[in-house]
Length: 206
Image (tube, rainbow, N blue to C red):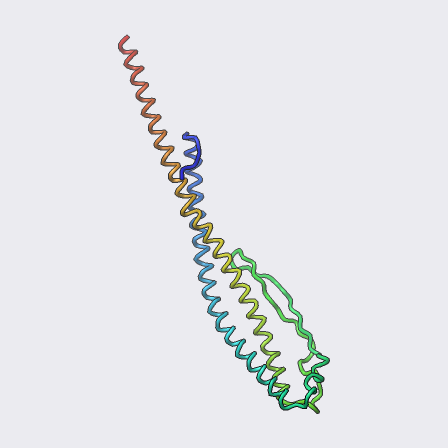
């Protein structure tokens, strides 16, 4: 769609500069989109494999815990876990992927996972808690990667919209407008030349 501008040489120069900038911006955004897609696809594979690993380890931990409850006297497991000694906090940071700031999660741990005596508990309970303790690190890594994938996907979508706007709207409009102005300027030049020739003929006849 042609832009509403006056068909003058000054406007033509402005539009030529503008289309050069638009094409340069389009190339940069296209390169950014391709790199984001490459990183996104690579991370998706990592997330898939990590999720499978986490789900497997969680299932193992829950199975160990179910066995611990089955072989322990009723109420002993709840009593053993009543006063936990281990404290886990998460420190949230940021790092950049291209111009996108994505979160990083770091675990801060204090205390031990085993918070009970061994007289009335079983080795299955120890194993289930140790398995759960191990999987929390993987869960944190999974959360970090899944959030990064989500943010990368959003950024890819935004970048694609900008690329499409430049490629299918702005640049064609500028090209059409430049063509229109050139045509108008050419018509004006022919009209001026025709008038000059008529004036010249009139002067010659005198």
